Image 1 (cartoon, rainbow, N blue to C red):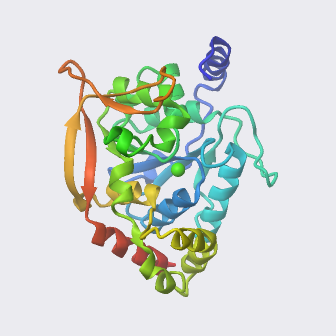
Image 2: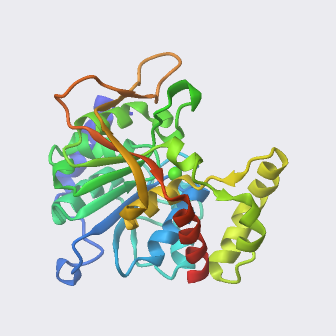
Length: 316
Ligand SMILES: [Ca+2]
């Protein structure tokens, strides 16, 4: 993934496309001080997070959405995002593609600009103004960081759904496990503030399945969508006795939009194990003062998460 050949390919793209990436919005039209870029791997919880973000689009514009592998392949991730944008009447939000392919599974064409390069370009167009919400493996972010040493300097903040802090008792979080080297690069080298919304925080703040019959019958476009995408999971998780529907990425999106829902946090110098046989993707605390700490959101207001979820379903 980080081979010399691929990096050379990306550097070539930098040379060819420098200045060639058009922004989805002109700087003249951008008044708020905070803009979002979302990097997503297209899972169900990603789509629920996007619905929440798109509901708040007028207050917090999304400059772009980049896609990558993870919950599904990169093409399907783009298709899923397209469906969500159509559902929310926000087709104008630009999706920038992961390197190597220019069509989704449904055959729609996308920009030929690799997502990592696009992230770099956006960060330079809007220095200090972008909160980058990472909902999948951190591959695109790490590549952007490797090809552009100023990338993270130009970001306002990175908020990551990923990592774990209870070690073996929790298990390794999916996004970090999928690309532990990328996770380590961002956690140890990012110059901007980094906030982690880890696995434990999301698992203890799920949506109670007892509310499902009511929520899944919400008579709106978003409500109908939720009912369809969650039906199988509802049956399976109820059968095995799970008390809540864990909406991982939705919690991270809620933290970005509503920072006051954070009820507990810690700051630690972190790294991610990426070389060992059994533990790649494990978040570890480093005993050093020489690096900038990462903010770990260790708890949120679970009642507020449920209320945001309910309001999201009712919004459109
Ligand atoms: Ca995701």
